[in-house]
Length: 162
Image (cartoon, helix red, strand yellow):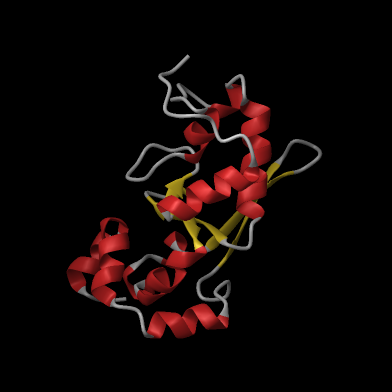
């Protein structure tokens, strides 16, 4: 199939450690962050991961990771499902005015028994724990920009308006 990346992540715990280590990862889309689906497979995936030989295992691990309390699923990078580890939430909250609301809303997707796909979103800051908001007030904005600057909403960055 594709080229080998590393040993595949075989458990939800390993996948959570991957998200924690990288801080920001894409679920499957190409972009400016590592792809969790490829880390789980241990190789580059051509086409949809759903059709990959390990698709069911990938799905099960993704379900566990996106359900974890320490992981925010949002559409931060180019509108694609992005996972942000809790250790970076204060920095994200510090820069909230520089993102489009859709970028930092918590998203969840569910496949119903009938096979239908449903999505929902919880707007920022409704999903943010109070202690994270308190930490955000003390966050170094320059350090936060170093983490998230590449994904700021261009219109908001150029005009300086929230």
